[in-house]
Amino acid sequence: MVWIGAGVIALGLYGFVTTLQPDANFGRILAAYGGVFVAGSLAWCMVVDGFRPDRWDVIGALVCLAGVAVIMYAPRG
Image 1 (cartoon, rainbow, N blue to C red):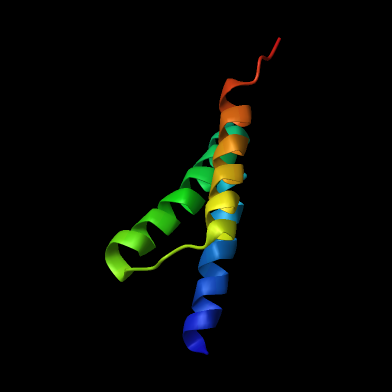
Image 2 (image 1 turned 180 degrees about the horizontal axis):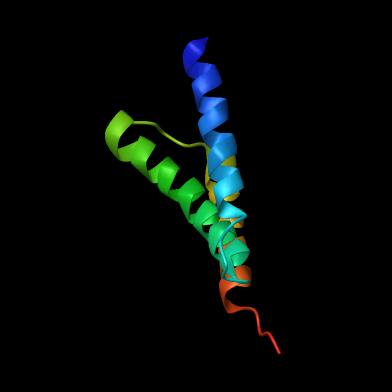
């Protein structure tokens, strides 16, 4: 139970610290990182743990990567 509490606190602090970033585009950077993290986590589990993703895992990871592409490459004026 202590580890859960520590994890919640660490995640909360991480979220708070990200709000202090001076770059106006940091939110986009963080969102893109999140999409890559989801897909990378599945890849890591496949390589290290022998996890076999089902089609919904793969579809979800592709949706995340599509979101990254929209965030990174959408035309902005």
